[in-house]
Image 1 (cartoon, helix red, strand yellow):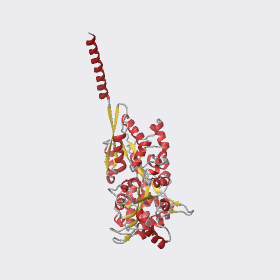
Image 2 (image 1 turned 90 degrees about the vertical axis):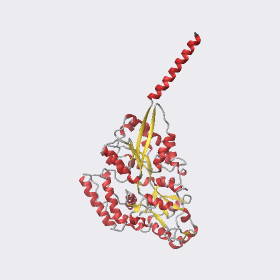
Image 3 (image 1 turned 30 degrees about the vertical axis):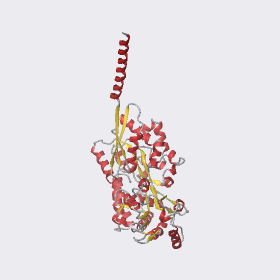
Image 4 (image 1 turned 30 degrees about the horizontal axis):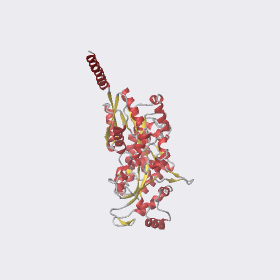
Amino acid sequence: MFNLTKKFLLAFLASIVFSVGVSKTVSAKTVEIIMAAPDWPPTRFMQEYFNSNFPQSGDTEIKLTLDFIPWDNFYTNVAASLTSGEQKYSMIVSDSQWLGAFIEGGYFQKLNKYIDADPELQAIFDDMHQGYKEGYTTYPYKSENYYGFPQFPDNYVNFYRTDIFCNPEENAAFRAKYGKKLPCTYADWEIVVWDDIFDINEFLTRKKGEMLAGKPLEDDMFGVTYQAGKAYDFSSMQINGFFWQYGGDIWREDQQPDAQAIGVVNSDINVAALTKYLDLLATMHPSHKTGGMGIFEMQALYLEGKIASMINWVGLGAPVVDPNLSKVHDITGYARQPGTMQDDGTISRWANLGGQPFVLTTWMTDDEIDAAFKIIKWWLSFDTQIAAVKAGGQSCMKSIIYSDGYNALAPWNAAYVASMDWQKDVWHIPEFFELLTQQQEEFDKAITGQQDAKTTLDNIAEFQQELLEEVDRIQ
């Protein structure tokens, strides 16, 4: 009888354990976050690293699915999805320029109440570099209305070939001709201004078969090159920096309704800045003559060894050091981009902020919001950010970028961090796309030799003034 009872009891207990296990399996749920993302290495890494390293906990499994979209179609695809009402995405990697349009359209969720209620989110906001926090999270720009978190921060870095710039014979010849050193080290590049690039590019422009750094060239060679592409914002990003370095400005959305476009956008200072940009461009690789010097075209030229230096986003650095993709993977140095000499002898290095935040959409459920914040906290945690940086990414969290050893994690980190205080952003307003599209068209006319700098900026200023007055942003 005892044995029978014991067997019955054990069977009963086993059934309880089994039923509990089944019950737990049945009650466990999965919350999927679908995120629209541009298709490039920083977002590919996020997906791969999440899949293998995200710490699942509790009875809810969080699944992150990035929908990778090519950069050329990214804005139009996201805009089409949002305006269609399909509510496909719970998170979106958004360029900062899109914030106003999609916030006022009712698609991006304001985060202040969540931040106010969560000390961990407050700590994240306190830790962000101020310029990147303003650019990636605020609308109106520089307000205290927060909508995003940094997915990938970015700014310009100068990638240059050390086998050319550090070659003793080329240095001797350059010094003999121009009376100054051909920049080789990071410190050398720190005193280079845009005016110096005229001499550098004249010296390094060589034809196929000519000698350079002791070898006959297999292709034509050109010197320092920067953005001049008609697509998206490629020329505007570089030209805005020239405006700011010269002491000019773009239309200031943070000073509306008093800020004007006419007299600011087409100021004499901006005309001089754009003229310098165009004059320098004439010394660079000729792809710009057809509107084709975008960031990826320039990267391809550098990886193929056809230009000696490129001013490009640090986010495009990983392929440079990949021996499977790059002919210059082991002969590249890194520095800040040149700047403009000021009257007081300092060098202005203002540039247009790159990179993207990610945002939450307004139709998310409570479970999705909770899951999204867990993903955000994980992504912006110290260990994950360090892993992203080692994989070619970047961070704008002060506790990370100013930590010991950060600059050693990637060869371009010192240049990236040193440039962070020199970042400003373009407009966040809903009308940004009309402003940008018309501006890119006008810049392309100047870049391809169809009109001069003054005509270009007069046309842009007139269009911006009229549009911004129509929507009551200028009085």
